[in-house]
Length: 194
Image (cartoon, rainbow, N blue to C red; front, side, top):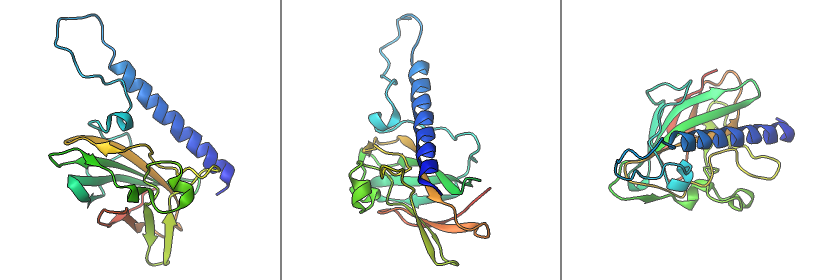
């Protein structure tokens, strides 16, 4: 995959993230004052608030492909693993805090590569493992070294869910099942669709 395509894919993801953030902000704008008690501010993006209740996105099944248990009551539900004709796999997931306290995400999720670490908190440490082909796939990066994954999520409030994504190079077309690994979480086998 060319670096130019990776940069275009990243810009597309950023545009989608901004559009969703704007839609959340517009949805939070109400009409006049109806005398209701003050409602919490919902105009900030989920990563800035530390989470929100997420609904399954279009193209995702209601049942997760896998659920990975992590520390402090965190659970990552992998909702889809979609192969794209452009040569990559996009993992869409929901990070939920089932604990009674706010959970601060470990810096280990970002991985240990200097180039990724300098871009802040992310899910850049995630990998896909194709055991049959004996290959490990790392999160894609754009031309500036930024990981093609959700970034900036520092914590998740108790009871909240944060939608996350990660993009990887696609394994060969014959590979339909891989092991998904994320630091500090249990690993799980997932099926790739598409």
